[in-house]
Length: 100
Image 1: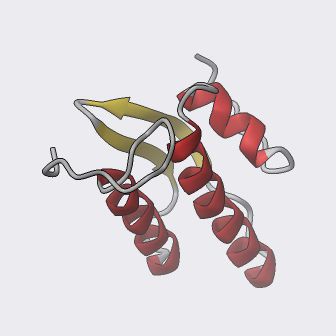
Image 2: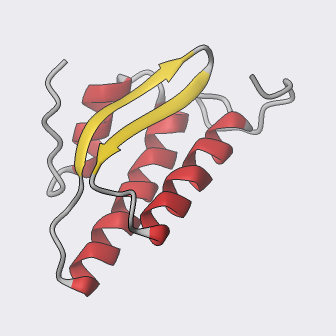
Image 3: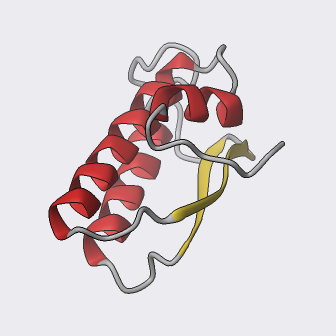
């Protein structure tokens, strides 16, 4: 998997990382990165580099570089992971299972 992430085609990039079958999580991550893009645009900062977006042990994992000092980005990533923990990766509906 290429680490290339296109902020001009966020949904397409997320689908390349997660797969088109995982529409529930694709929506969550797309919304997360749209918020990050808007945040960076408002601050006139470059977009953070995306290493990986994946499912591991039933949990969403997002690995990025250069976000340690930006509280907004860290919180937005945490929110996306928490939302994914409570939803089906395929359809996005609320999951009744216990967190992994």
